[in-house]
Length: 180
Ligand SMILES: [Zn+2]
Image (cartoon, rainbow, N blue to C red; front, side, top):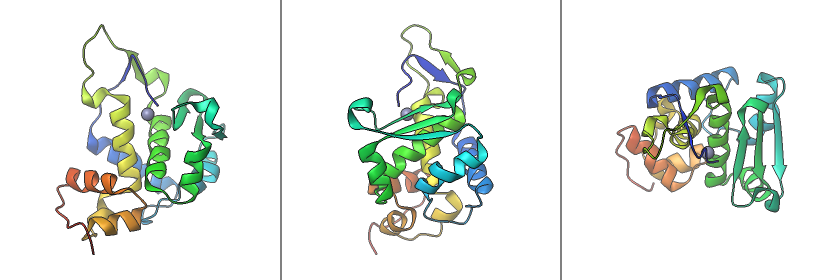
């Protein structure tokens, strides 16, 4: 989901790792490799946020948006084909859902502000960067990823795409070969 003219409060990768870790902890999932995205959307988040609503929307209602989040209404929408992909364990769709969970936790209106003029947004204030970084941390906790030896192992164990696995291991300064 795009935030257009809005920016978020500045944050750091370490802070986002921390928020993702806290969510896993509240859900009792600290040691689980394969983050159960569907269960969390359908049961986990409603158990934490009383008013949380998860909806699967048909393609035309979503256009080219894979997911949409309304943090102040505690609501996440996924496009039907994306939801289908999540249920099939597709890495890219699982990442979209994790990204939207990031918006839910981080981007209430009270934490967003309107950007001034045409100035480029600072990376650490960009809601999309923050949601992506959070998504990577949620699906691939540092402490668990560090036990992997290969990119393929990261993909299998955490249910992520090759790109996401490469990006996360690079971010953690882990050098890994691609295949078993
Ligand atoms: Zn987004």
